[in-house]
Image (cartoon, rainbow, N blue to C red; front, side, top):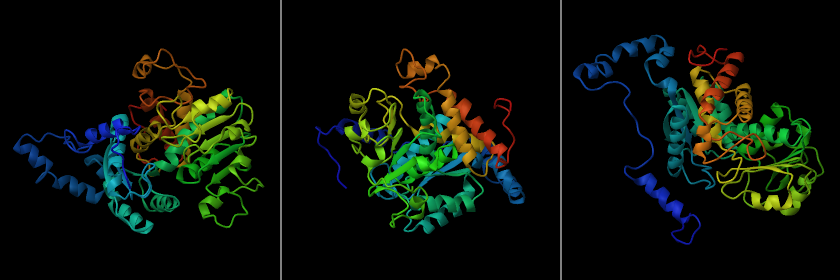
Length: 424
């Protein structure tokens, strides 16, 4: 792998600033803080020996007391094997550590959830599964991150089945939830419905397959969705499909991305840069929705797309365009809700609840604090505002309770409704 030190490189300035940011004044982005007094001899006798013995005895008698006497209930493991780190690919577990620390920053800043980042050197999915299973008692939840498809599906499902705490692969479900929330709003603006919309999903990795699954669960018709990978449309006649791709295969005679795009109402790209041409965009149905989420370079750039179509609603994965599909709108608050009612898992109902909460929040008047944070004079539901902004303080007020309510209604919550939540 090479990196550029050329000052003429477009990313040179931010790359240098990022290196300084990560290295100074002390290396890394996260640390551990002590939450109880440790100033006197009595403090130490309570924090360690002999005082620590009593909570040990209590937990040994009743493991649920770990949530009362330790940090377990507010502690999430952010874990990777380094096989699919951002857009950099298989860089290895250690090289993925800056990303895992970054995830910890977001958990703490947005939802006050503590994180240990864990980078696992595993040669096989089973080695990874075994490692996570053995360390799971430490945590209240597991956030899997940057694990390549198709192994990510196998790993997550195995851990969900073997553990009694939430296991959530954010590259799958986090992305799918934000896509779903934005898409529902975009379709509303375009006068279309999820059940009738014809969709093209470009990219059959973790995010693409999870998005298809969630959209179907929310009312999209399986026969209206064409998924496209590097070899073309994923159809039932292909003999090269793994079980996960076969699960999204369609019965169709369309074979190429160009074929799939003709007459489509929706394009969702979770693939690579500049893969959608002007002609493909022009061939879409009236009032299309285009989610070009490849980052940093979208499948088609918004300025180009708007030259071709003036009737579209568009989202990207970038913060410098309107309608950023950003996972930080989801995972901190989804875990906050799950932890607050001690959910044993994050199920489909909880994911849908999060998507619906995000969708509905975008319809509410935007507080002045949000306008100030983004240096805006005004912001209202419309073609350039189909998702909340990440610094909207209302996210923590609305998403966790929605997730927690779904956990209780589906029987996976083991704790009471928090007193500081809105009344049920």
